[in-house]
Image 1 (cartoon, rainbow, N blue to C red):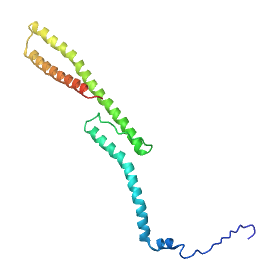
Image 2 (image 1 turned 180 degrees about the vertical axis):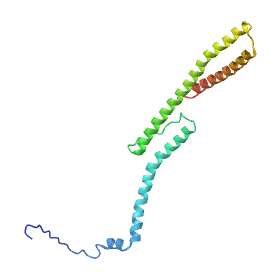
Image 3 (image 1 turned 180 degrees about the horizontal axis):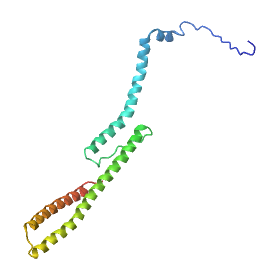
Image 4 (image 1 turned 120 degrees about the horizontal axis):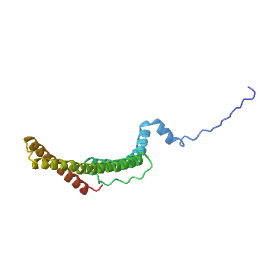
Length: 169
C-alpha cells in the first residue's frame, strides 16, 4: 500500500536467569497473592487508622452531646477531606443546638414571667369582689385554680432560672 507508515520492532531474548523472578511469579499465583497481601495489608491498616481515629472522636462527642452534655469540647479535626468537612458540619450543628436550647430556656423564663401579670390582676379582682361581699363557691374555685396556676408558674420560673444559671452555653 502506498503512503502507509510501517513500524519495525526488534528485540532480543534475555538470558533465562534474567526473567527468573518474573517467571516464578507468573507460574506461582499463590506467591503473587501473598506478596500483594503483604503490601496491601499495612496500607489498608494505615488508611483505616487515618480515617477511623477522627471518626471515633466524633462518635464519642456525639454520644456525649446526645446524653445531654452540651458543654462537651468538640474534637479539633483539621483536614480537607470528607472527615474534616463532617467535623466542621458537626461543630456548626452543636453551636446551633446550643443556641436553640438557650433560646428555648430564655423563652420559657420570659413566658412564665409574663404570665404572672394577668394572674396578679385576676387575684386582685378576686380580692376586690370578696371585699364587696360577693363571696361565692365560684369565686372560691377561681381562687383555688389561681393559686395552683401561680404555684406552677413559680415552679416553672424557678426551674428556668436554675437551668439558665447552671449551664454555660
